[in-house]
Image (cartoon, rainbow, N blue to C red; front, side):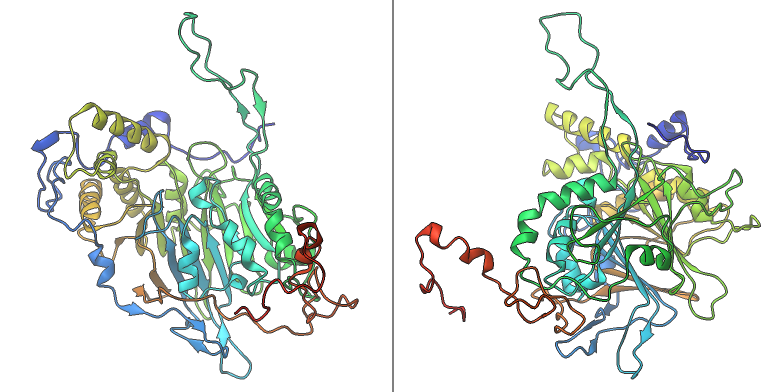
Amino acid sequence: MNPKPENKPIGLSRREAIKLSGLALGGLAATGATSRYSGGNPNAPLDSCYPTRFNTQRYTYFDQLPPMVCWGRDMAGNITGTKLEPNEMRITFMGSVVPMARRAQAEMSIFVEVGWITDPDGSNGRPEDQFIFDMGCGVSANYQACGVGYGRMDKIFISHLHGDHVTDLVQCYCFGNGGDRKSPLFVWGNKATGLPNPGSNPPVSDATKPQPNSYPATPEVYDDSVRAFCANLREALRWHTESQAFQTSAYKSFPTLVEIAKDWGLPYAPTQVGDDPPNDANAMVPIELDWWKTGLDGDGKPTGDNIAYQNSGTGARVLHYPVIHCRAGSMGYKLEWTPPGAQKPLTMIYSSDTKPEWNSIHHAINKDALGDPQGVDVFIHEMAVAPEIWALKCQGLTEPGTDELWQRTLEGLTEVQNSSHTPQGAFGYLLSEINKVKPPRLAVATHFPTADDTVACALNSVQAHCPEIKKIGDRLVWSFDLMVLRVFPDRIEQRRAVVNDFSFNPPIPTAHSDILAPKYHLGDDSTNPGGADPIAQIEELDEAYGIQPGDDTFRRDGY
């Protein structure tokens, strides 16, 4: 059944959306060899970017940011790098590009940490809270390089279930129990949309022509919820989790899911998928959200009915709202956190993938209960690279083509943009609408193949509709992997994370009395955490392969 929300999404009309899509389908037109770069003049025609004089293999703006070593711990447990300040929200782009992932950029993932809690002895500490928004292909390498262990990757907010936003959930889930996450993996996402499968197109009258497709003609409703996704993913990874079940994976004293729901202000008490104990690292716990709720009344004031997470202990709150991307169920998120002694919260919006729509604008204006606009500190919104540039890059050209292959490629990529994304110029238009009321302290374009040339052309498109943006820098930047935003009440610092490309996982905590024994362990004492049996499943199969008990089949020291 389709949900019938009282709070209907405030979106653009079809006519408005089509108009916005045409504002700057990208920044240049398919004009063949006549295109030439304009030299950065914001009033130049939008078809003047290529051939380019800019570097196509470097993002100079990012390269010139001040370097920073992310905070982490060494093997002795001591803090290394730049720890968070008590009044800091830190946003790290672990992935930033449209698929496919490339060597310079992984797919989408944003890691957010807030505040700092110092250990009682004053020597160490940790962030008050942390969150992951999306987890696309390739981002695990950046999390590892930044020293982020699996224990800090337990709260994942999924904007939508496209592969480039969920792929590395497999890595996070599978290897968490072998790392330092001895607790469930919590995954937020959409409730089922209730949309029917429309089936095939109407049959053609000419029997000699093939049918448009072979999908069933009878409409069927299937479960497209985040819970169904998690349930199927958990079963798909059964071989993996069983093979790793000689590792410890649960604390004795871990709270119940009912207690966690209360502590985290969840919309309801969730349950894990599958048959794993609810306190185990192999337990995957989806939290389904009423994706259609905007959290806004007719005047753009908050209604409070769109809370995904509200931690009374840390003061962090995550809100959700619908966006327009391919099909119902896609969401943007807003994070709010009030630093100690501050009068207002620090705020971040992550729209993820969306066509131009009003919900992101209203949430960025951020009216309070009295209707006064508060604005947001960091407004992260997707931007689609121009279809012409996308086609040009895919074909390895230096300027738009003219042949049939070019035209087909351009048409296909234009359809992708029009179906579900925000063009470069439309991004500028959205920003201009926000700026009329309350500009964000920093706007960030993401989900974008970033380099000097693509950014220069995109900036032209943005400036054509938002002329107050004069350059990349204080008001608008394009994201890139390992870009770090240190957000304080009085300033935002942009940094470039310096990492070890040959890093290993962060240190795993030593076993202690609060850890339960693994599934496969030695001896009869199931509470003994030191009795792991890593070859239990192998020895059960030895005789089937002609190996007798006691035969030396390998050296246990590994040499």
